[in-house]
Structure formats: C-alpha cells, structure tokens
Image (cartoon, rainbow, N blue to C red; front, side):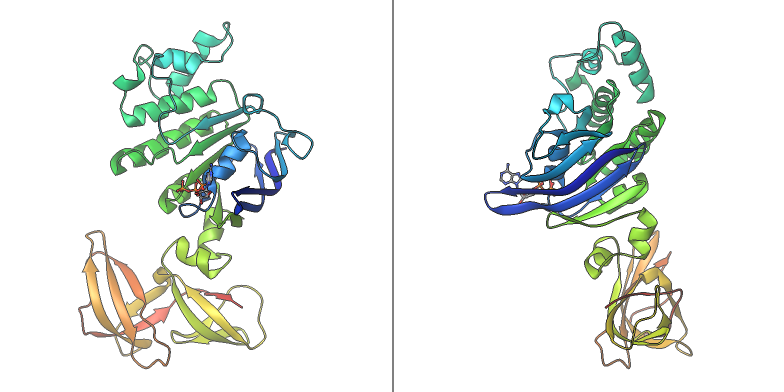
Length: 342
Ligand code: ATP
C-alpha cells in the first residue's frame, strides 16, 4: 500500500500558481526528499499534505484514506501526519517529556516517552525545558514528538536549516536512523543537495510548482530529466552536439550516449565533470588550463578547449592538489556514456 498518493494537486496565491499539477506516490517506509530552489513551492506542498493549506484542486490520500478531494477536506489533526518545522516546534512552557506526551493517551504515555527518548538518543532529558536544549537537541525532541502517536507520515520542513554545518551532518545521520528504526514514512523538504542525497531513498526535484523528476538518487544524478535538473543537482559540462548513429559528436569527442539511438539531429550533451580525465596533451582533446583552485581535499581545474568552434570552458574536479598549472596544455578524455537531450 502507498503511504501517500497525490494526483493533480494545484494551488494558487493571489493568482500566482504555486503548485502546478503535482502528482506523487510514496511507498510505506521510504524517505523522500523534495529538493528545489527557494520559492518553488516545497513548503506549500508539505503544508497542503499536512492540512494547513487548502489546495484548489486535486486529491491527497494518506495510507489509503482520502484526506483531500473536491468532496472531502479532513482537518489537519485527523490526518495522522507528524509535522516537524524548521525550528520552534516545541511548546516552550512544557518539559521535554510533556512535549513528547502531548496528545498521547494516559495509559501509553510514560512508556512511549521513554521509547521515543531512547530512539533519538536523549534519555535523561525528560525534565529539561526546550530553552535548556541546543538547536540540534530541540530538533531531535521535535522528531520524537512527531513520531510518538504512530503517524502514517512524517513531514520534515528543512529540519536542519537553523543548525551549523558540523551539527547538521551528525543530526542527518541520527534522524535517518530514528526514522528507519521507527519504520516511518517521511518526506523531507530541503534546498540542500547533499542533504537530499545522503538521506533519501527517493528524490523529487521541484521547479516552479512542478515535480519535474521523481526517482532514486542515483537516477537523478546520472540521468537527470532535463538540463535544468542536471545543473541543479551537481556540476555539469553542457555542450551542443550532433548525433551520428550510436555516437554523439561534440567538442569533447565522439562519445557514446545513454538510451536509445536518435536520428541525426542537433542535441544538447551533458557530461559530469568526474567523467573527464586530464592527461598529457599527446592524446585526447587539447585544452589549456586557465585557472586552478586548491580546496585541500580536492581541486578545481578550469579549462578552455583549444581547437573548438564552440566556446567550451569545462571545470573539472580532481582529488588532492592540482596536477597542472595555469597555461599548461592537457589532453581530455571522457569516460562512460554521456546524456543527451533532444
Ligand atoms: P523556501 O525554500 O524559500 O522555503 P519554498 O520552495 O518552500 O521556498 P513556498 O514557501 O512554498 O516555497 O512558496 C512558494 C511561493 O508561494 C512563493 O512565491 C511564496 O511567496 C508564495 N507563498 C507562500 N505562502 C504564501 C501565502 N500564504 N500567501 C501568498 N503567497 C504565498
């Protein structure tokens, strides 16, 4: 059974379309990340699922129960959804234990509070007040509170955005672990690509109110649905090319491409920078190094192709120190299949 099924969901604010025919299915027990730039409609989608926002048309089913359609609008408190906002989810005047116990039946309360504190690694914090917790601890308790009443779906709206980088990495792992242990189905909204890729089973890319691609993280990275997705989820070398049978001709050579063969036509070619290796200028496509930037763990090598009609300035990442310097001539080789768009 699907934990969530959305069809044709639309929503406008003052004539501006914010959700544009959104369709989504999420199997039970999976974590989906909705990844998109600021203002694309991520929060509006999450709030519509939770019941805090009223869409104009479409349907939403949670665990087989219709919660929104033209005939039915179930109020938020009846949707069996746990919502964790960016920050400030906890009642400031209640202790940690009282926050988690809020809304639980008297019989199960104490036992469930214990279980939830263990799940998020915060045993012993029962009597603390929210202001006595760090930002990361507050988010753990917010998740514990959301999970406590056994919801069908957990919604996390940029849950780490208020935290500093070091804490975020640890909390990501802990929250993923807690969700998995609880067998929860969850949707997390983020504009942080690393967060989406490191945590999610599936990623939905959102742009201008639409879900433009929903797939496994690997499929989103290796076969993005269009050039915008390709450049949004990582670095990409984008070139014009010409299909010739099973190969595509472009300034970086005659390359194999993914998918079925196209008839001879002009296409856009997408190459991930890690597919490109830099060698000596004796072989490969000749390029000049225009700049190198050393980051410690890796370096960025900016290049300009020497004998190309198309202006082509790829930037390639290599591990460790730059193996070349500004002004050097090098040979570029592309490994693996490239992606083409008609
Ligand atoms: P961010 O990553 O910045 O939080 P988002 O992708 O979550 O952005 P939303 O918060 O869903 O985007 O907003 C989408 C669009 O809808 C924005 O243009 C926003 O200004 C508009 N919007 C959101 N809520 C309202 C509202 N209550 N009234 C009018 N416009 C709104």
